[in-house]
Length: 267
Image (tube, rainbow, N blue to C red; front, side, top):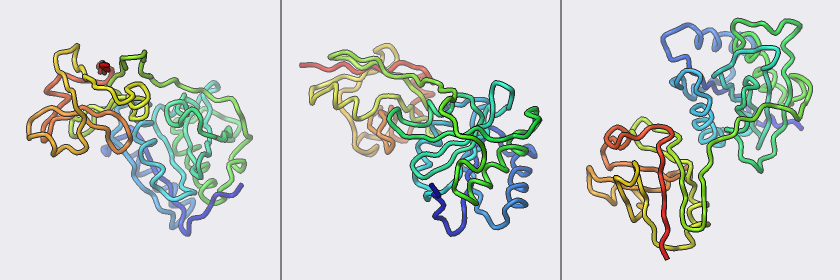
């Protein structure tokens, strides 16, 4: 099925390259040389080196805002080997190009329909710069044709990295911090839907840092809490977030990725 509905195709770039080296400029140059006039959007180049979970978190909360037909290149942990090929993915009208490194398990919801294809990288899979030599031609082909089968044979077998999920029982949700944003807000893997399903409207306490900090209410906005005070809310991605109004919650509370956040519901 041809999903190309853009007047001018778009390719987004997500990487752990930073802005100091030549990698980003080289990839952009080759994209433009291959398909002049294409729109290139820098989604994020400050991913921690090889941090696939961070890349997936940023991309999954951004890609749906782009027009259908957009191609998203994920240039993190992108080495191509005989065991880790380049794959193309198609879901909800969007295309993705990445290494077969487990990304789909972190990027897509369990019930989401996804098509996969193994990108034809030629006879030699040993590429020193696969993002330039393999990802760019595949992304440009997808942007031009809107057909995943044009880059390689379809497949149902890809690597899926399993995300950390909250543990639950009748009265407790035990989750963890999965992302710390540039404001030092600590974002957890506890969703609004899970909170509502387990909580059933009951009163609750949120325990942070082994019960050292407690909250018993949820904000709708940051400003509901005085400046400098601790708060919790469900953010635009529908995930529980621990923050300090106009403050740096993660650093002040000693939170990091993996820190436990527990919610206990009361009758």
